Image 1: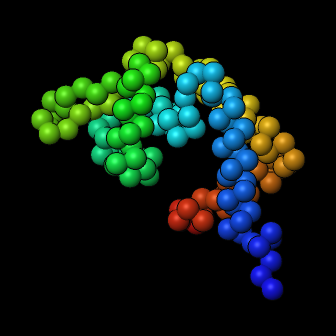
Image 2: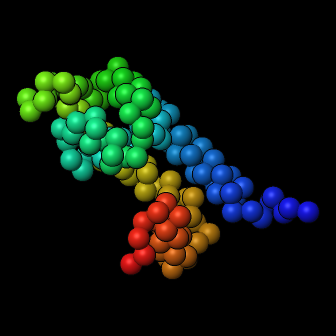
Amino acid sequence: MYDIENSIGFLLSKSYQRGFGLFREQLDPYGITPPQFSLLAFLWQEDWLSQVELSERTQIDRTTLCGLIDRLEKAGVVERRPNPGDRRSYLICLTSRGKELEETLSTLAEQTIERFTAGLSAGDRSDLVRILGLLRGEPRV
């Protein structure tokens, strides 16, 4: 009989759901979801990216990304600007409110990871990041 409760797929799925839920609770007061936070985090690293560049970096398909940008734009944290290098595309840039949220939301993200991984040693955390990277398709180092 298949041991579903110890299968990698089941455990990854349930771990994701728990982590997502913990982070969602922290972000709710700010009207931001975990996927929206991810998009903001990439913009905090480098602002003024095209939707194509954001899609590639976040590994979010363009249709889903467009919806995330729409909601962030309505929330007043990002805006679309015409791309001077390509009239067919837009650049996504942070508003002053989007920039102001960086420190607070980044701190919440770090606190959530600490809470989520509280039962792991530093070595376990490092191994987890390495293994997840391998599962994601990153090359071995």
